[in-house]
Amino acid sequence: MNDLNDKMKERWKDKRKKAYNWPKLIIMVLALIIILYLMNHLGNTKNVVQNPSASVTDTLQADTLQKEIIP
Image (cartoon, rainbow, N blue to C red; front, side, top):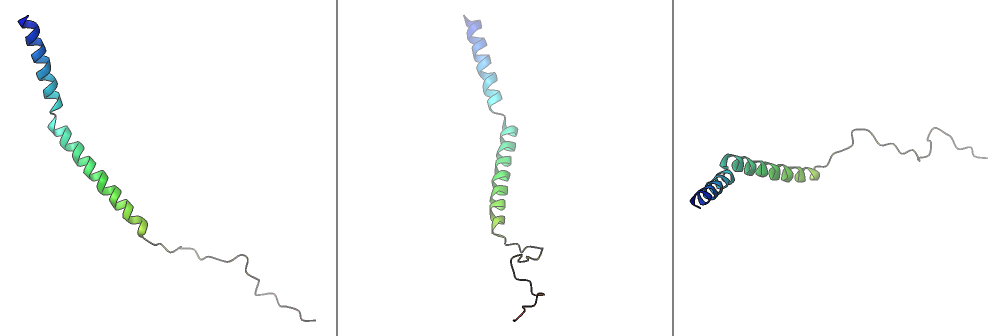
């Protein structure tokens, strides 16, 4: 019976050792902080106003080269 108890305690200790993986936890927390920072930075970029680089032409405007014929 003691062998069974020892095996159970050993398995429990092994599982607890795996659960306390500090380097992995630190890396995941740092990755979360970086992701949140980048999301905040990208959220602020939508406030930037950009002027169009190409000139806008009005295609419905009357042609100024045509002369009106007065009868």
